[in-house]
Amino acid sequence: METLNEQELILKLRQGSEPAFAFLVNTYKNRLYSAVLNILQDKDDTEDALQETFIQVHESIAMFREDATLSTWIYRIAVRKALEKLRRRKTRQRIQSIIPWWMPKEKSSDANLHLNEGIEVEQKEQAEALFKAINLLPAKQKIAFTLIQVHGMKYEEACDVMQMGVKAIESLNSRAKENLRKKLAVYYKK
Image 1: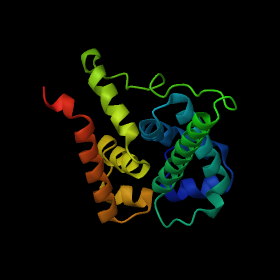
Image 2 (image 1 turned 30 degrees about the vertical axis):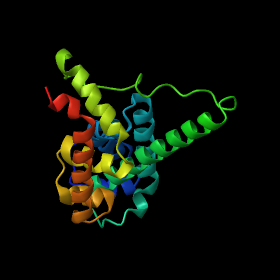
Image 3 (image 1 turned 120 degrees about the vertical axis):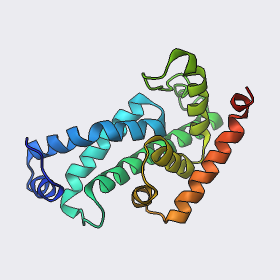
Image 4 (image 1 turned 135 degrees about the horizontal axis):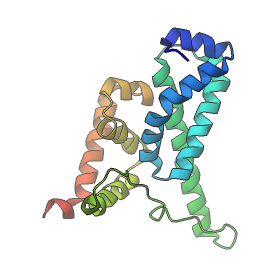
């Protein structure tokens, strides 16, 4: 399909065009995958969250109010799906710790930790420590840090995605960096 501007794409999506939907998926899947993977740190959960994201986009495009760009709206949905997965994971872990006989043990998140294939072998230990530390951040800090520091989003874009003000995003990002410095102090002393 030829390249469409945002308005043409929205119109075709609202008309139920399958080629337009395929174009949308192909345009956004890699960026969204990377962002959601950095939040969830689990390939299977990331793929599920992305599938749920695109299903919701398909089902909700008629209600898209265009008060933000299409990409911001899609990112917002993807981040919300990632947060839902994180909440479900924490709930399952809490239930499993309280009544282990009732719920089977979850796979270890550390065992399923995904590192970017581009990371050099000698840096894998440090990268693994970084991603584990990011994973321990409170959800909103983790998302703000991931969008801004890992994906290079501008603060204004992150504000639109997270539906928060610039000061709030700056504060979350700053606290995330401080928390990471504390957790990774051993690597900075070398």
